[in-house]
Image (cartoon, rainbow, N blue to C red; front, side, top):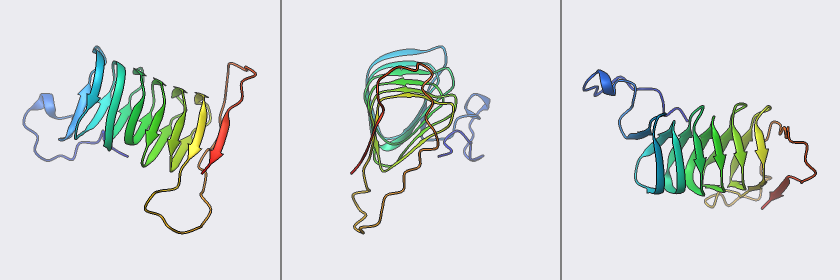
Length: 157
């Protein structure tokens, strides 16, 4: 998911140069509380608290961003902090800088070494896929720096 790269077309002025068309942006100095839904991709660089329902679209949680609430999305990439459950129809990616506290559910999940993660993982096969092949789990490494006795659960469906 490369939603931060401008396509070089349809640039109207210098203020819009870094933001591709069809992508909403919550800037680093903004705090938003409520319920978010819509029909475009979203880049969150600030703080957001509340439910997010972007079932057919993508979210990028930037470095330094903080999101608190349940999220329903197509794909999500996390470089910042997310607290809440994520239900994705595509892929969940947590970078080595990312922090996640909550349950994950998606057909594809990647958690990079160095990421902070606390919660459970549920890998659901794609609903359109009808074959009986094994589901490949793309979890590179999980590092829990808190060293608590709580267990991380992995469940294959």
